[in-house]
Image 1 (cartoon, helix red, strand yellow):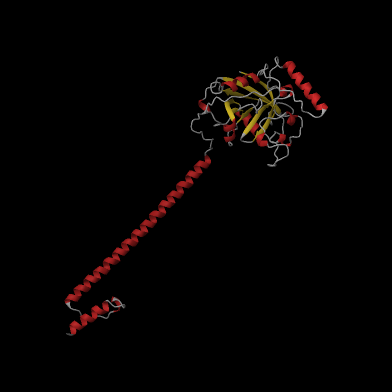
Image 2 (cartoon, helix red, strand yellow):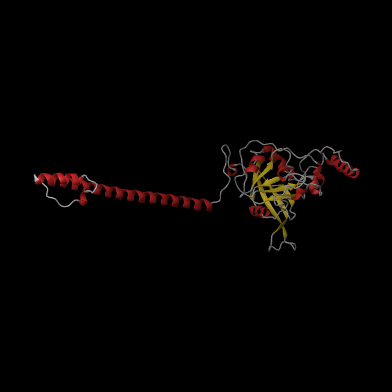
Length: 338
């Protein structure tokens, strides 16, 4: 009976809040010894299972750490590579590369007034600098035809602008009448060309606007450039384009190749690319220009000014005329078809 009492007491204490470790050694029967052995094995199995789980948890944590470290390293490497490669404007769907466009004609432009330090070409440090433009006659036939005429001595035949009779001052009206009559005298015999026209706007890395006609040609109507929907964009340095419509004058734009070309793609028609003289384009792009620090000056917004007006040339009231105008005068000295 004492053995049975001891066994009962052992079982009760085993299920008590003290736990198995707080029990004093008690004599047990063979049956209870086997039970305790099974309990010990069960505890050992639980401990082994917990150790296995802990080990797997450490492995999973290390795996996750290695995975995220690998991802961070890959992202950093991709960023460094992309930062070192120059990004050119992406071509939209339906467009084609200017590198694949067929060059049908070539024209040349010689600039006068670009500085070229150390070449000893003249006492003032200026020299004539030449670029050759390959024209895409198949992709932009009408604009190319006009440009080929403007670069010749004969020029592009254009009608005179209607006489403006709204001037209030008699002196101004008399001057306007004189210019109009002079234009009528040569309307059929003299065409508009680039003789002593100028580089009139430079927005660094975005555009170099060339061909602001002067003198007797400012009384002529501007040509209307028609878009043949070729799909060509400003996808490389040296791409040449004209403004769509008739509000861009006779000039053309050279894309330097490193800035945002979205505005040019939207407004202009690609007509060719510079095939010789990209060093000259780089120097044109580097010309210092007038900046107004973004001020909105009385007289209009530069964003709406596509071609230099007569008022700008003769010091009119349009205060924004000088915005982005090169501080140094650069002329188109000689032009022609090759």
